[in-house]
Length: 81
Image 1 (cartoon, rainbow, N blue to C red):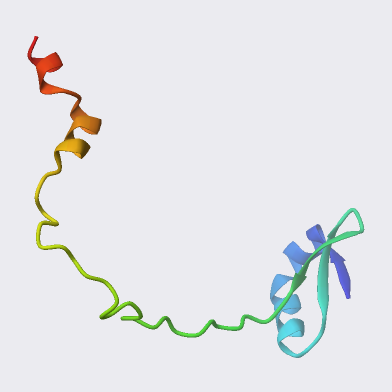
Image 2 (image 1 turned 60 degrees about the horizontal axis):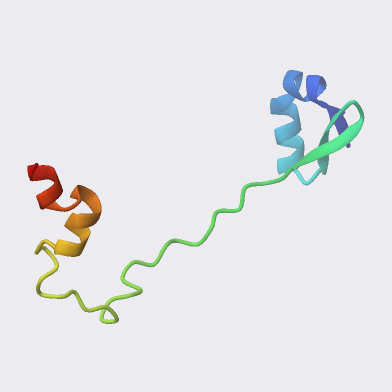
C-alpha cells in the first residue's frame, strides 16, 4: 500500500496497526515513494567488558605532560613577557 504524507499524518495509528499485522506500507511525497514503515526489531544488548584485560593503564596517567601543556598554553616564556 502506498500513501501520501498527508494521508499518513491523518491515519498514522491505522497504518502502524496495518504494518504490525503484516501489511507493507510505503509513504510517498507527490506519489514518489520515500520511506517504508517497518516493525521495530530491537538490537542485541551491548556487551560490557569486551576490552577487559586487553588494555593497560599507565601508572602516570594523571600526571601532566609538558608537550600537551605547550599545545594548550604555549611556551611560558612567551606568556611571561
